[in-house]
Length: 251
Image 1 (tube, rainbow, N blue to C red):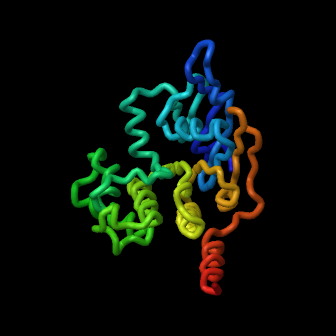
Image 2: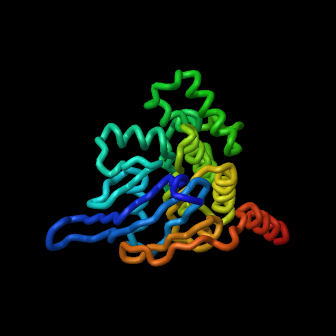
């Protein structure tokens, strides 16, 4: 890999909350690059700065100082409308709490990011949303309402929603935090398949076993990078899922 392939580059990112005598330095000069095709996990204990960092990378928050280059473009000081356009066109987000609209169908939830994209007609929006749901194995659930879906299915709807704009980067914030082990492995298997197809994924997790399904881990401590290393062997979530199913069948 070389710098020409760099998708994300941050330089000396600082984030200070409550400036003044009681200020909190959530991030202290964080710098790194992320490249095409990577699957990166951001880890650290509570208060380490990992969620603050993800919010800055996803343009949900701005750094106090430092530079953020996305696909070679400095996005540190863009206008609100420019930032909104980047979030809508370049990013897909998956959250721990799913963030689905209640009493609406899976299809309607996945269509949401496209409503703000004038490049697509109503028919095209629906077709793209249907394809995204089929891609995560929910082609037979497109008209089911969110309260009719299991937790794992709701998270897959959220993944489909993140995919519908064919984003440059998928950001996932504790995507398995509300799921049991078996469902977590299913969700991580989907992420690995997407990464195998070339999709760049940056994920926050506090679970070491979930981190093992990624290709690189960045561990934060007290607002600074404590460790940044590639994993020698990426475990396959599908294999762990099969192991649990086999174990259940023997009991």
